[in-house]
Length: 483
Image (tube, rainbow, N blue to C red; front, side, top):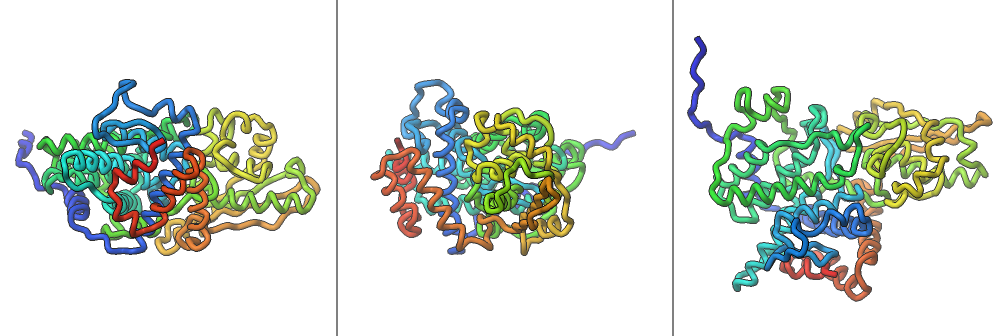
């Protein structure tokens, strides 16, 4: 005879409690985290502005019902759209992620914590516009920066020890989770309401990684984070109505997240929540490439110069060996035909071939016009990935967090170039001195894609001044980006 099932409602899972207490109680006092968040903000928005040059992205933008304008709604930077916060979060999140050029976090799980800006900025802007309309005080950009730091921390700390990709789930699960927690705080949820909201994010259906991997790689990977951060805003708004939560959503026997989706394993944690992730986040500065390939692309650029110096052409190459880390092999080591830009920007061989041939790698180089160059596939066929155990170890070392790649080029005449090794990309914390001036130039370039000179300068004047930016009302800052 089976035992009856207990219907005593348990206390909330500790993971939920820890997230909520961090969001509600942690005071961000790290000047480094706030400065890095400001750089992250401008880089992330700049990536979105560049994406607006691509029709595949802009066709998804705007309201669900064409022509809809929401009074005091959130504005979408670089456009004339003014939308409800859920749809605005989707718009901002999709444009941010479209070109795979915003920041990155690499650990047991990888991802892009600035994806959370879609929900954070849309909600903060919407709240601020409604506050001003009713004679109340708006949120400031410091509230946005603090929200970014906390969203980065939630997503990144869970990712340190817990691999969702190994059970087939996409990392945007963590975007939905982190955005829900931070957006809920901005909306003024009580502690109990916020616990409910976070539980709703876990009990929700979660994205498969199907769209990131051969043979199904496709453009959903460019809007999946927008979908996740917008869903977070919706869940936080639902929780604000007093909708109930599910306290043992993770640990419930048979029906909880751990048993259903995580092979019965509980989450593991390396460190408590603080500001570690923002302080150590990786910026994509030089190349719009999947981050595990950033150092490989940098090495390929060096080799391009060496080929020219030696009077060699790519046709003279017999073999290229890519010494790399395990995660790169698992994600972007790809043979066979590449069917679309989303396929190409997740193929390490493609991302090496283009700079070897052209001496560059831009977002436009993933489009059909460049991909039709037959030299690219010829070079791809000559490349072999080999795991280096030390590279893999250093990738997971919290004190190093390297993303190393090394390339060796051998020629048809039996000669070879010296191996080119790059351990840390220019967007790494260890290369901030070199990287931040280039990040600012990347932002300037992206502003120039969309705005006249006077408007560019107005945005720069505020965005590069930490104190002025932190004090500025959110709605006034977003207004600077209206075209």
